[in-house]
Length: 183
Length: 280
Image (tube, rainbow over all chains, first blue to last red):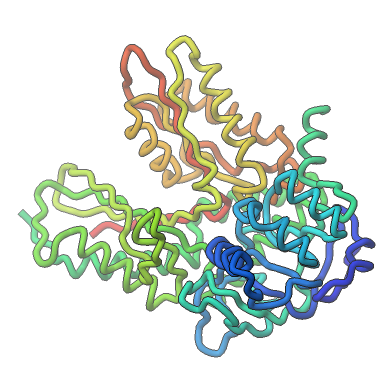
């Protein structure tokens, strides 16, 4: 069963999602990975505003390959989310709606997800060509000098993802691991 | 003595970088077909079908299979009767990588210094491994390596008393820890023996071996089979979302080692196990 959701995402919509749900996301999302997170942290440290308001917004941990002529973006699959764990709770406490990435998150991130009623989605790692087809437009809005690591504003349509940590703190990866321990 | 122009190396490396990032080798494509049939979990099957579709789109529309087009790992086997004319070998290879990654719309993922972290903007330098062999030809292998899986690779300096059971534990530990981060289903390259660096290099080399090829050493062949079965029974599955296909292959290489040691290196690769080979 597929669930269609829109980005930015409301707390109500996030609350209705459970681990294992297969969702199709449409709307506006933002990319940021290691270097952009570091800069956002530094900006917050100086009391500056972020390049976009995290409130309700979805961050996609992704650095694309360059676009060929006539295309909005190149290959565009998720990167490992745990590298952003150090920066994530702060963004969640600023109201970040959801994250898209791949792989497990820290206990601190999970607590912040529950505290703020957010959600963490996984996109299929290594499916960058397929996922690029669901991105309609891409615009660099900050940190252009970082190249692939710049912050991009993306318009997506039916972007496929799976709920791996829901707003109640259920964790699909952990469940898979524990099932195996029992089996 | 046969003379080979450095330009010829550059041209081939350029083409191979582009080729490897858009098309998987035949052995990898075959193993994918088998995996889709074998996977028992519904979500796992869905992930594998997405990955199959992804490969199709990549080749038809010339979009890299994965956005992490990797650091360019290049293996050269140079015949000892070859004379290379032109720029230095390293320059010839780096120029090929530079041209391939800029003209081929590949991502530039290399920083010039591990701490200062300024992007070199052309994906150079390559990681170059050179071996001098008999003959008057050059065999080139280009294997772009992504870091989602590279980050999950490990080296274990075991004790001789740990024996083969210790080796098995080490491999399983690395794979379990890699889990969903390494974009399973993975290919697992293992080096056993040698020294610290030789062992790591063997593990990398094991990844570029044809996946359908088994080790010529009987006990190693058995170990490859046993570890593939054990890894798949971990239940990590495609995308780490549960399932019966966690690894597509386990390739193991061995080398003589010291009386005091048993090094084991585990180089994890995601399902996009890119490698392409040419001989000039």
